[in-house]
Length: 228
Image (cartoon, rainbow, N blue to C red; front, side, top):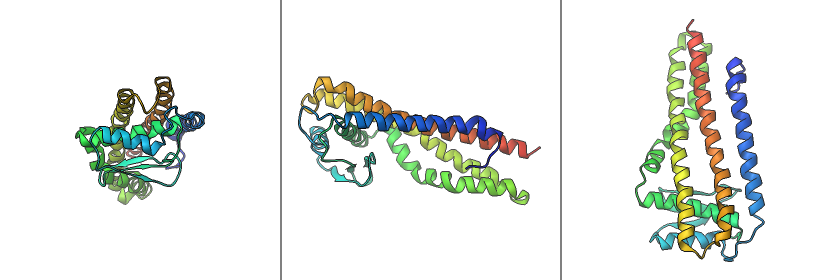
């Protein structure tokens, strides 16, 4: 919400700068290791398939998805989607292992993943309609209660970004662990590169959570001032 006020300059501008830095880190790190072919010669899809089969997750399908770095795991359909499934790079295999980590979370009933999946509809509502309700309540005095309803809705989105952090960190931890245990998908010397790619990706989730929290603080401060 680009309504300019002192809180926007104090809170949102620094958060935007952090988000841009995080995006730069993930793209630069990924592009660096996307040029390094894994010693195993496996594609990202083949690596993911091996990891899933090793865990007994034969029912999880692997599909290609348009875009770049749009990789994700869909727990509803048990589908792992990769943006570059035919790449044999260390970076692509690392990302595929991360998504396989999400499939393992789903199979093991990881609570944080279950909660995140449950609040997706709330998050979608909060990030869009919540801000609209807030703005309407702010500029139309008779509709001021909508401002607080908007804040409540946006708080649902903030919760989603916060619960995403342990989900993503745990998936990366599982990815490194299963790659180490397999021993044949990436060489030991390549694990450091995989870790760098996953750490850079994790930074984007930290930035998103920071942005959401600071936006919520901003909305609360604006609402408090409007009551005076």
